Length: 233
Image 1 (cartoon, helix red, strand yellow):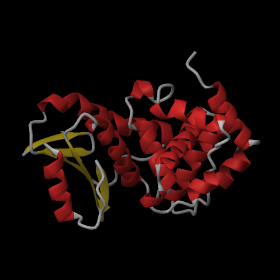
Image 2 (cartoon, rainbow, N blue to C red):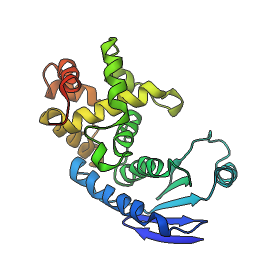
Image 3 (cartoon, rainbow, N blue to C red):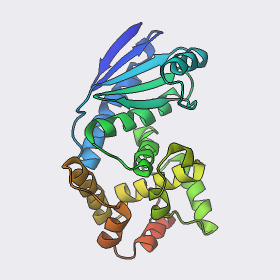
């Protein structure tokens, strides 16, 4: 088994990792980016990454380890004071690793992360850094949704408590609110940082939707305008 350490990640694979060094370098930088944008802390628990050469080997291993977990192309699991990411070698591996390692880093720093926010941030950070602000695959689809009156409701997302309740729209809308807080009004970004900080300190953070509504006047209108006019200068 090949092994490599990059930042907080200990990566193990049943194939050579030599050709994946640049990807692991990205993952190490991902922690710095989350600390910079969200003011979270460095990982407080070890994060192990297990990579498999093919889907069949990956599925067999996970069925033995987590028999009740439905199949997912990649998976993050926190077990006590240890975070684990599982994935297999495929064209989508870079996206899968950035997505699941975002989960791992958030849960290695935060005692709790609401499901929608957890997935929204993972969707945002799963693409390469140069695509995140202006070139996400979600952006065009979201604009079509909004043209037909489908405005993402943050309260609706906050009501989701299980991954089985998250479909394509829920992932897209979660991404949209994460993007709005990272690139929209300064007060929205500040409230996200404060929300995470309160949770870290053991202070009940409440609902982020309520906090945003107080911090950003005309929240829903500002959200719509953000995506209506968002483009690279």
